[in-house]
Image 1: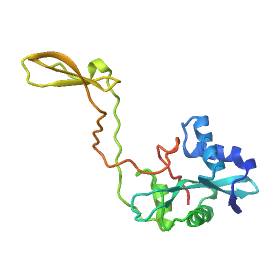
Image 2 (image 1 turned 180 degrees about the horizontal axis):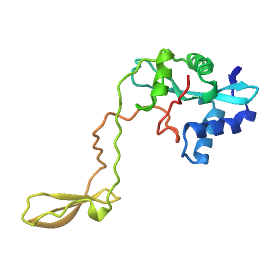
Image 3 (image 1 turned 135 degrees about the horizontal axis):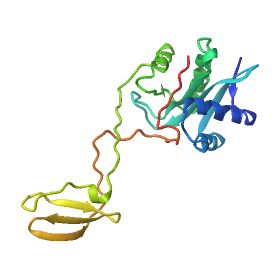
Image 4 (image 1 turned 180 degrees about the vertical axis):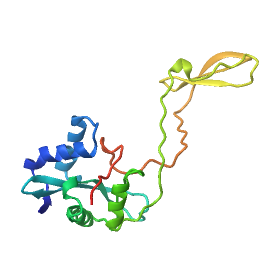
Length: 213
């Protein structure tokens, strides 16, 4: 088994392995990572055997990461080993070269993530010395169409309704006056902590470290 940087001849196998790690993503979306790799923003390492590529590790530098106090931080963007080659040291070896890549690029800390219900990946991280930090819950909802944003309000109500159009014009209406348009600057209302800093890749929604050991 050889652990080495990816070569042009490995690109097809790399994309196929990313497809296994993130099933359901568009092929073109998975191929997009090759741009960052060619620009040197993404380190990609493979485990090559006589059978072909059996594992990958992707690593990048981020300005910060949960649980880390230094900057920049090496970040394990993807980690995958074919099931038949797990528990043989391949995943640990891939992680080792990803950590070394991070040290060379100025990091003194290393981070990763996985889904909370991915017990295999969590166990693999723990076995390699990672300590779990805070859990982050993400929420999602579909946006209603413009005419359905606000519920019906009785004319005797004292509720003031504001409707915002695409030009940041706000239509304000209440029981005692006709709707009028007011200009206002963009306003951001957040109910969560700031978004994780760092390069967001299209396939990262994500989710993200693989299930390997």
